[in-house]
Length: 310
Image (cartoon, rainbow, N blue to C red; front, side):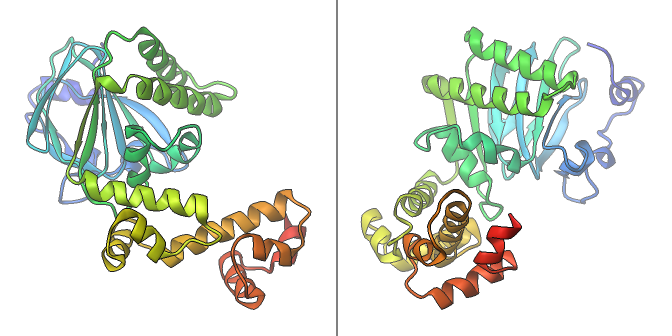
């Protein structure tokens, strides 16, 4: 309930948000480096009360949690009123504005760098709305606005997890970062279990599903995967799917497949007794010379030296 310095200035007559606190950009894109120290992946910030917060977006993922009172937003021209205990996830491309909150309205904003979710995603199955939201959000080429609105005020286990995460963030301690990751992972699992209470908004869900299915195909079939095969499975012309992959990820299908194969090769180098030639075959390459070339380009060393280096 305590007033922040910004709120004190507003109550003393400052009628506009001081944008320099949030960005150096002329467009009102809130910069995470203004709010979060470099090297930190997640923090929380109480939303500024008593003033309309003008239309903006962020270069990070924001989760807003109504700790007390209510939150009135206009998200992509859609009016949303969140009640106590409700949550909304916003990706970097969504535009929203927030109506002035009263003294009793306590909104907690989670400020999160996308890479925070690299670990969390390993805990989740990929066939759910949260994983789909996070997967595309992790790629900066994806420029469609999206939000997930969770109507979970009555779910005590979810409220308890949110309370624990807030306490961990306000009171740093030993193993604090690991605890936060695990708690956020558990929170997402519980939100997925309550998917009947989620309102989803995306400006292009269909294209997003094509990309997610392509990732899944590469993950499962990287040894023999081809663009023609996945195009046939998805009933899409290969040139159309190729353009979508490039648009959403900044990479071609061939580059995505190569990235997966090289990552798998490094994994096998670290945990198996296979020879380098056996690993080359296991990840789907027939030409050892080509494999050595792309491996050295990516990792700056040969596979054999990589073994001893690591």
